[in-house]
Picture 1 (spheres, one colour):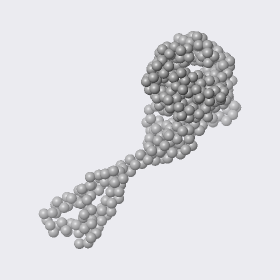
Picture 2 (cartoon, helix red, strand yellow):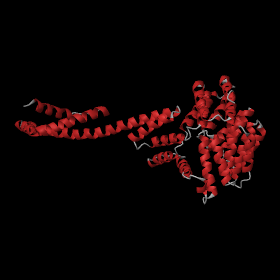
Picture 3 (cartoon, helix red, strand yellow):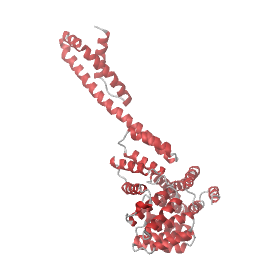
Picture 4 (tube, helix red, strand yellow):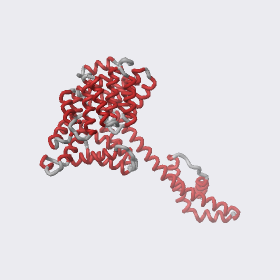
Length: 432
């Protein structure tokens, strides 16, 4: 009896006793059992003869061989599953790397890893979602649309995804219109809406000059499209030009739709707050809420004004009202934390600063300068000063509008009542 034959019989016995293992061990075992099966086929006749010489062992022996063969088939199936599992783990690892790079603002590197993740595991909707956010940062609207469509196709359930995809498709339509001549014949209101959506996207990217241009184009095409006035007013407010901001909000007050007028009063309240006319600001926010009682931004503005007045209890109530309408509004959670810090509820404040940072990072607009700014405020509120400053610098690398800086300093000055951050405030003041 040859050694090769003996080895084959022994190997079959080992296979029959296989109890499983890690994915790596299963794959290794699969490779070995293929060799055993091949050898068994070569020696099948000899094995049968050997068993016939010992008739008592015939049934038992052959049953063992059949069991070994079944085990080989099972190991093959396990091997297939193990390989799939290892591929998914590699894909998830690359997705995590992409997320980390994204948070650090390294968009190009993040895109390399997320595309590798999608290639390895095309079934993961979260990878498509992250890819869409990254391409949005790059301004590649077509890729954003493809990525968001992929996320939906793979079953991702995300509250704002369908709306954002619709906006991106509209924007893609707009970018395909090469000249003003191609606008002829299009409904002027629809075109104004597309231009305003484009302006919103540019504004989120910190490209405020380009956003301003888009809103102005929208109003040239359709002066009655008052949403563009609202958006333009907030851009002027971020620039610190409160006179022009007030003009735009005043124009929007002519709207027949109550909600648009509510947005206008909210904008005027923000202007008065920035000018430190707190009583006027409160009255305007209340007018906004009379028109639209479920408008969370007006509650937020009201809370910020109360905070600046030193009425922290009223501020907390206003912020809680805002969050009862929109519980994932990370900027409101930040403001609530500031008010809690100032009223002495330090434990609740710390919890909410942490929550605000987490919500900001998970936000659909996590790549925007406002998200980075809120992460920075939250981290500073938690006492993580170095990380907070880093996030604020990332925000300011995208947008350094004067009005925006003044609002940021105003928030940090409130925190400074409890946390020593005057150095940070002085550095920001130097930028104005």
